[in-house]
Structure formats: structure tokens, C-alpha cells
Image (cartoon, rainbow, N blue to C red):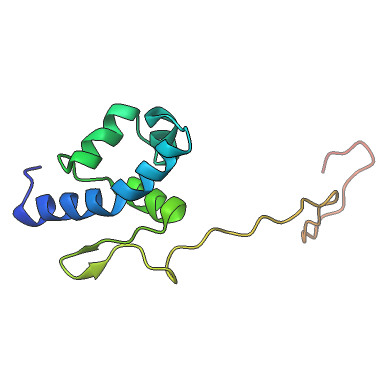
Length: 113
């Protein structure tokens, strides 16, 4: 699909928002590959985003929000808002299962109906 002027503008805004966060991670000693993996891309792919050459996928936009709290509007629409994207709370697994099924047929002693 051909990139529109708004797509290129969004890519630039995304790069501007992402750059300081990536720079901070680099200062902490993380590699471009490791930082890219957090966003679901390779190190060279991350560099394309930082250069503003590539429009990020929806997955990358959401991961950038979850990792760095980056939210860049596209034509005035917030793609990821604080109230709209939340991680699910993990619950502890239970050791038992309950199946609310009721059989209406009598089962023979050999297990067949």
C-alpha cells in the first residue's frame, strides 16, 4: 500500500517519541536487538522506525505504548490511550475445574449409552 503524507508524518512523530526511550535503554547497556525485541522487531527494523522511514504496524504501536507509554495521534485520533490499552492481570491457576454439564441420559455400566 502506498504511504500517504499523513503516514509519513505519523512515522516521523512516532520516531520522535520513541528516540528518547531507546536512547535511555542504550545508555543502560541494552542492545538494539534487545530493544527491538521488546517492540516485536529486529535491531535494523527498530533503526528504520527511529529514522522515521517506516510506518509502524499496529502491533509495534501497541507494544511501544505498553513498554514506553508512547501514544502518537494519527490524524487527531489517539491510537493507544492510557484508558484504552491495559494489560490483563494474571490470576493464579486453580487446581480444580468445574464443568457445569448435566447428562440427561443414563449411562450403562460399561460406559456406553
